[in-house]
Length: 294
Length: 279
Image 1 (spheres, rainbow over the protein chains, first blue to last red):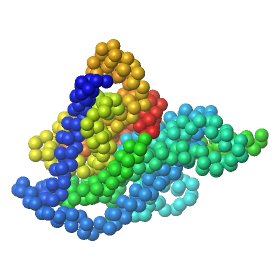
Image 2 (cartoon, one colour):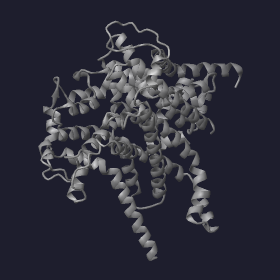
Image 3 (cartoon, rainbow over the protein chains, first blue to last red):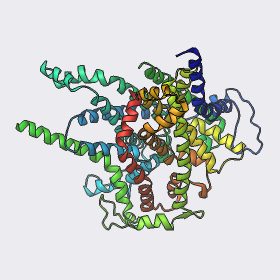
Image 4 (cartoon, rainbow over the protein chains, first blue to last red):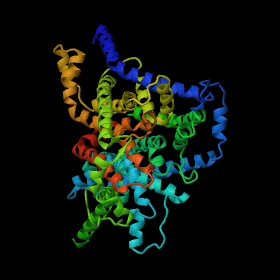
């Protein structure tokens, strides 16, 4: 390619990316910058006077000294770790299980795609209805089986509520992990396993020395992606419990939403959002490094 | 031989159990939608309805109204808002994904980092300034505003998927066409787009369902019932004095079935596409 052609193709590239650059700049970076500014101002949504005075780090102080801040950080950590670990382990297990030829395999794959297709709002409603103490199917079934006398109120008991939303999150997203790991497993050549079998390798050492090293790169990218998605997705939790009972399921995203749009403390919400954003950026950098390595 | 057979039986049993667990909430959804709310309140709460009926569907579709709007209005709003946002973002993403995978240009690394970064930005961080901006410019309560919002959140993820797709696709045909004197845009429009139709349909579906199921942005940007999208109509039931469960489940089923059917139809494309982007 001559220099002139190379220059030409560079200009063409800029035309191709112009729309996406505009969208990112105007609809993502600019609002994010506004959000940073808002986190330093006293911004109360319903105040008639539109004055929004600069208050320095007050919002951050308010956010960090919220009565329930410690509990919120704890709940966020438990929710993130437990649901990501659940998704990744169940995903890996089921992918290994499905990675063999059997009758009906394509049907099973189809079944696994369904939780991915069910909209979050619908998944949340199904769980709320199923877990209802009097008319829900879970309590109904347990009563019919005679396993319980009194109904269990899953969503009013703080421990059970957090456990329930974690189970919901795992159900909704582990099949995605399964399908991704399964795709990686299927690109492993069969003869590698055959060679290992001839050498007398046990199932465990075949997994340890053949399978795992080959699917590890995909598994770790999916892991980082799941961490990021779990941190940013709070709708699932919000729609099931609204953060309750008494902050037992208030992950930080839920609190930002409630502060901004229920209590109208936009400044505090923006400051909390910045804390959340900082955590996400750390993982964004890790994720970027992973993608760059290939 | 016997051991082998028992092993096989155990394997199938395991597969069936896992499939049932995956499907159970979906089965509950359909099963509850085939009752009436009265039956649910009089403790017909087993897995199989005692007297299956489509009454809940009829009532959710034709009798249930809030502020003069019904399921049909919300479905139309959802289709229009998500349809337009998907079309715009998929086209923009195809162009930028093509550039990111085929051209080396100054700032490519930065753009790629921004694409990755925007996927990790919690949307709630965008929602607060969106609300403030839209309210300052008097653009709340408009479907256009919601559609623009969806373009913003769908474009980066679609770009990421398109970039992965184009990187896994050979450039031979394009190079041949270039040598034959086709312009870059000609190559893109006449060769690349037609070749990427299967991937494009999967990416469009992937994007569409993000908007289709969105509660977060819609709940803040459009509050009047006539501008609601389906997730808002769906959650409105919960505020009622007496929750009409059968109707909620019927609506949920109607919202979910088309998406599930499309996912099943495009499953191979979808899985290969996302798996390809993660490789």
